[in-house]
Image: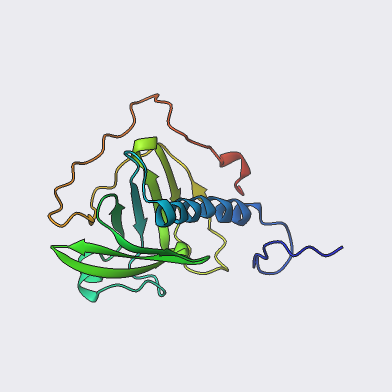
Length: 181
């Protein structure tokens, strides 16, 4: 019996790559969250911090932004973002930087972090340089706001979110027992 389910490229079939399946599923959470935001907007206090690698080969953004953020960049989707479009492999969005609109195309494979501070929810991914990388582990931790960010606010005047309290009841899933040793 042949199924037409999602096809993952796990490389040579020597073993089932549960780590890649879990990572793809968790990236699906990011994708589904962005699809919801694109179709309905962000309800209540929900807002997203999305951290990614600007120099990933498939990221499309202004060179001056890449120069200011050589390793990682965090964008905030909250009040001022436009034309959010989500595909199977990534998303594009227009944000305002110093009052100037900038269009960005961000593949999910470049995303290293996703958080919704209002829900005390966060995911951290190891960067995926290529599909054949064996170090594609996923880490899920308490939300901790990134140290540097690029804000969707024209004057970068948004207040920093308050991280969850120690021992809080944020939505955290530990996947250590599923990782390769």
